[in-house]
Length: 339
Ligand code: ADP
Ligand code: MG
Ligand code: MG
Image (cartoon, rainbow, N blue to C red; front, side):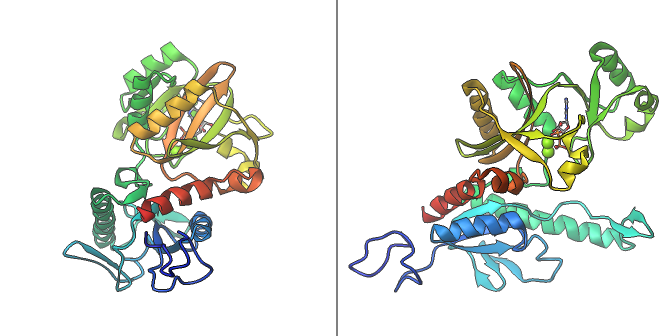
């Protein structure tokens, strides 16, 4: 209703080619950097739907930009932002201190304690703000418990398993004896981190020698699922894109291919069986995601779910195959903002 043109002769709910006389411009928000290519793409689609975009920089606090919550009312750069009823969540600050490079090595800041405390406070502000927005019925794509830094693969596997979806046999553990027993039973085993940030590797004899290293923190060990890598983009109930990622050489983790990291990946459209589509929708819902990038290994009749990403990278697929992912996100957020 904010977009209804105030002119008595114009009943359009949409942009009338400029500022609406007497009307208030409809805005959406993006938690993400204005320079981020996906933020730009969503903002462009929102503009086509008649909405302006305000980007809330994840680094706002680091840069000293003013943010406030005054008796629960949100302010950004000194301006009230409570009119915004729809947000795309691309990124918020991570709750852990970033590392810096010194003499070719990754180290924490010298003032690590101060930095660590600042980092926690900043993240806490954003998460609490997102929780408040969700509580106020604001549309969030995605909501606070899907804040992009949080990846809970073990929970996602539980959800998928409980729906009856196929997942690899999995051990998440820091116990060398349990890992050896799992390997003896399953044989073809890979390992990867819970939070991400490392390429998936094979648990070979050399890795089996180093199992004492894992006692300090748990690792995911998984039966290796054969076949091609699929990436599904789900927005709301709609599967906007489903592709097989094609790399020329065989890799356990397709990201290890220089072609992929160099931006030269190619994709092939794949049609998902109805039952697998349903698992995608139900798993995303149970994980609190209205937007998800879902990873599946596929061979023949086997569709093996690996994970759901809450802030997936997707622009390469959108540009190469023309799948309207940004538009689907913008539509959902703008609809929410319209109320
Ligand atoms: P993330 O992408 O968050 O690092 P994934 O679980 O998607 O974690 O693993 C990354 C990639 O590693 C997958 O896309 C897939 O290519 C490969 N991979 C991960 N787990 C398995 C598995 N159990 N079997 C075969 N390949 C796997
Ligand atoms: Mg993945
Ligand atoms: Mg991931």
